Amino acid sequence: MQRWSEDLTRWRDRGRFVSILGREVFVVDEGEGPCVCVLHGFPTSGFDWREAVATLRKTHRVIVADMPGYGLSSKSILSDYSLVKQADVLVALWQQLGVSKAHMAAHDMGTSVLCELLARREEGALPITVQSVLLSNGSVYIEMAKLTPSQHLLRARRIGPLYAKLAMYVLFRLQFRRILARNDRVSDRELRDLWALLTHNEGLARLPTLVGYIDERYARVNRWLPPLRRLDIPALVLWGDRDPVAVVAMADRLAREIPDAALVKLDGVGHYPMLEDSERFCSAMLTFWSRVERRE
Image (cartoon, rainbow, N blue to C red; front, side, top):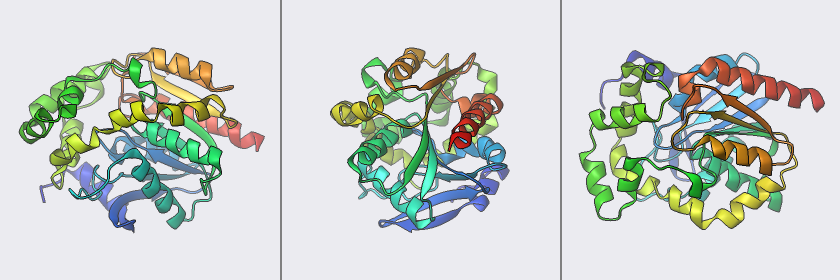
């Protein structure tokens, strides 16, 4: 195992591993009160939310799990990493942790896993009551996305595995900083930690498979988008307005198409609001949840 930074070691020690559907899932479960289930993005992990958890756990129970293939969770070459399977794993995990009702907070790729959960909810096949949904900087409307060069390369059948094998931290840092609004919002130390989790347990070799979530977004559009347009629970669209990938026009469209959705744009923030401006990100979430909980 590679040597962890102090921040990574503390994060690992805050969580535990749970066996779910044949996979070892790393989960951090902290705080008391109304439950919040977090769905992270690609290619990072629940570690993105570490600062947010420190704030949110003061008033809520916050569950942050690394989906299989990401972060500290298992990364077997034999696993099915489809978003449908990710939804299966998360639901089983939440049930094992005793969750019966929760707010759902999703970022990036996690917004599509959330769309699958909402489709199941509409079918009466989701065993957890969803109090509210939060969608942040995820390319729900995949045709509007401005994919990164790495995403394009990883999707190429022949080039993808070679590109993943040859990937280096220098390139990761360069491309990650391009999707932030300002370079100084995320330090080199933090980027090193993100890279350590990405490469942990042969994680680079899983990237060409994991990036298949983009194709799923195209293939399942008729399953995932209609439930959003018929949503009958509170929704918050919380977006960094300088995101060059999940462009802000997506946030505007989501707010138009989801009934009565609230829209909050974080000015001067890019693709990773929880890393770039955790204080404003958390403030918007807590204000939203407070309104929802007062109405219940």
